[in-house]
Image 1 (cartoon, each protein chain N blue to C red):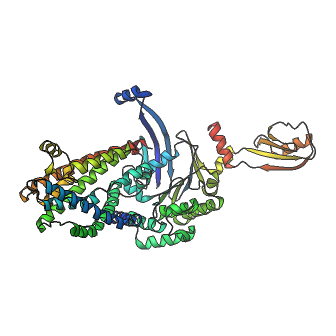
Image 2: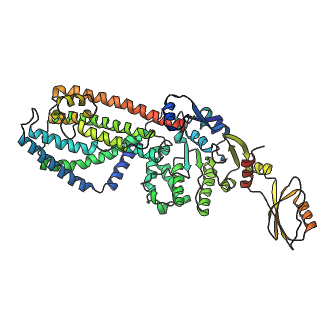
Image 3: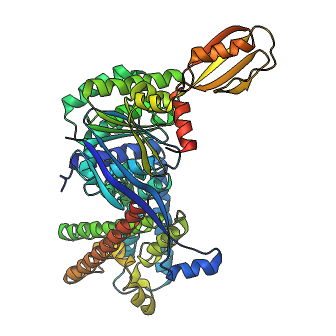
Length: 327
Length: 266
């Protein structure tokens, strides 16, 4: 049974059309013409319990709007959304008990309170049994190293500390579904790794279903076996990360270091993307020419000191799809 | 229907009290200023009464009692119990309130009430001092009970009025000017500063159809006896009607405001 389900989900924002100026403002009072913005056009996906899915797309693609509909704070214009058997916007409070949310850009902790008291308040809000609360808090404190700043007011925490606190706060009530909206934004490499480690552990040990929205594709590569890619409010890819790489990551780069300077470097089936006096980067499609054949063609023209071949990273693949569109 | 989590709202109220306790380190200055204001009020009314004939039904000891009780009652009533709504709309943290399994307006109510209860407790020492500075009449236990009920209704109306005002933050983020005017109107037309019985008849007839009197004047008049026991039922009835009316307006304002952010996003 799927735990998160959206089907032909659509969200259109309407605002009353307004001509500029005072006259326009006045006419708008009586006008019933609306400007429509389609934020989410047609999004369908199904998540099984325990999946850890990367939900990615460029800015304005409709990621946040989808997440807001999954939390129940936005009402869909049409289509179906169901989380743990509930339609979130119809049963916001009941749905809230089933989900945990972490926003990288905005803390959900109580600003004036020490972390410890924020957690105590959350225990009351979610009505968490004392023994579960104590056990979870102990586990999170250890995994996230919370002890050293447990008594510090949230306003005084560093970004990394605050994020660790936010993760604990979002998971204390053991939600089966968790939405993470850019949870590693602005963090240094060590803090990022700590957060990724924690997400992986939650997924592995507790079977938590996770939807991860991020622009840091290293997060996705490290954590997600499946990605849902959206653009212009539509799902343009849904499947394993490996298949995306296989399908779109057909271009590799051959880097050659010349032994002596060489004028004519052009070869068939490869494009020079970067040229320095003694180093040349060739971009080639591995379906059209093998690396070995390409090296042979280059050596026919110039003598080489060294070569290297780089695999495409997911970031380049996704950038390619964003700019070129899904074919 | 979800179960109401009383524990959560109680926790919010306690939290608000703790917050007030840490921020309001000027507790003692407050008590000092109450003392000075009481003394000034007494001086003014004593001087006025010695120059003029006492109005019917309001001898000097009654007006001193009225002013002192009004001042203490005002310490609680003048708190904007629902400013959390405005603040959380302003900084956007209202979104995270909606992500919790709680009723959001009840959260603000609990928070505001915790704050008010804290200030009400602070009034106790001020009340003791008031008894020393000015003589305060203490009515019968029965009248005190009706006063308490009426004061509670007044508090409810005040709360709902503030809630409606703060709801306007859904549409405009600048509400402090309107709020100041309303506070000022409540002070004058509600009888916080001067008992309404001293108003000229024409002004009195306007004030009687406005809600402000139900917030201050009604409980205070019950306390000092200008509302006699045979008029209690009517007075409490009017207060109840205002409370229900504002309850309705508050519900509509809240729902429309929430629809604006929930349906439209933002």
